[in-house]
Amino acid sequence: STSLNIAAIRHDFPILNEMVNGKQLVYFDNAATTQKPRLVLDAISGYYEHYNANIHRGIHHLAEKATSAFELSRKRLQAFLNAPSPEEVIFTYGTTDGINLVAQTYGRRFLKEGDEVIISTMEHHSNIVPWQMLCEENGCILKVIPINEEGELLMDEYEKLLTERTKLVSVVHVSNTLGTINPVKEIISKAHAAGAKVLLDGAQASSHLGIDVQDLDCDFYALSLHKIYGPTGMGILFGKRELLDAMPPYRGGGEMIKEVTFEKTTYNELPYKFEAGTPNIADVVAAKYALDYVDQLGKPAIAAYENELRKYATEAVQEIGGLRIVGQAKEKVSVLSFVIDGIHHQDIGVLLDQQGIAVRTGHHCTQPLMNRFNITGTTRASFAVYNTIDEIDLFIQGLHKVKRMLG
Ligand code: PMP
Image 1 (cartoon, rainbow, N blue to C red):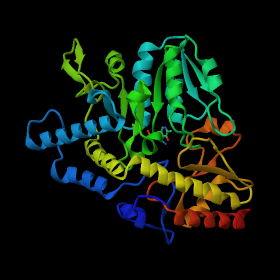
Image 2 (tube, rainbow, N blue to C red; image 1 turned 45 degrees about the horizontal axis):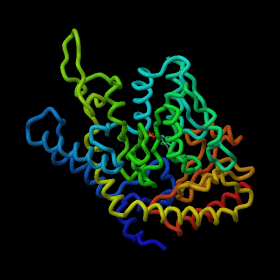
Image 3 (cartoon, protein in one colour; image 1 turned 180 degrees about the horizontal axis):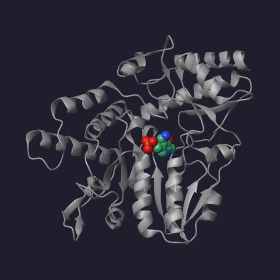
Image 4 (spheres, rainbow, N blue to C red; image 1 turned 90 degrees about the vertical axis):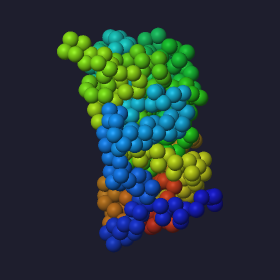
């Protein structure tokens, strides 16, 4: 039971009509990337057809039109996150880029030998490797919050890790592999009490939860639009103004400067200081339409419906003998990761694909998390607003077939 008209929503996503191996596509790989509604596709081609131009420096009509659409998107994202100002919303190539930006600017400038960075066991590689690179260069130390069997952070252990040496805590808001929603408000207030800053990896959270960076009081928030029905290759980094102002620039080049001479260059103000080069204009422009689409449906309604799907699927998979769900947190989003005794996850993925069902298999860029559970990978079904109970029934039939063939 949902207030959403799912049939009409499905109609908004042209790709859902694709046939895969003679079957209608069932797309359950939404945690990797969501599909795009027609209005986002139209916004991309509309930009190229009607006002393609480089932004900010031009005085001609098209350049002005492109610039204002680009900046309108920034304001839209500011509202989406409830950021205090548009200057605190930096366009990036995605979550990975946003985290690297912080590591390479804030981290390199302000973290010294012996300083500590805290991450967690359930981090995506993009929130592990940039900190390892920084530690290798600066001699700072990486600490890891452990988790329980259900896939929840051990908050007592987190508190023990926080010391006066902790400079930064960088954790995932919602786990892409387990679906766990982390208690980020508590994480942030405890870090702040210890004098540390906090970055949240919002790659998964931003499509399911309302995000209010002022209420969270996070120092940095990184996300990717392609997980929120928007285009690939673009995202944003929110940062508090005083931190962004204090940070050195990331990449050098056009747009990020105020004045260049061979003797000395001065840098542009926020947000342009961090936006060197020609950005992904078409996709930035289209991002606004993705967020409009989400808001028009209503995030709470989307989340409630996705939870219905997850609960139904969680019940239904119990009938598959030898199946074990990985990630049973009390607070979770519509991600269902599992293993089946004696059957390799890759074989499950291949056999489901033959039936037109797209799931993700493997370590999901969380190898240390796989090690924690003593597995090499899982099969992950992740649901979005256009998925249906009927599709889950097909998926369950598919799993029965996998069992018959390989079990
Ligand atoms: N963090 C999490 C939790 C993710 O799920 C992802 C995407 N799989 C990323 C970071 C990286 O996002 P992107 O590839 O868009 O940079």
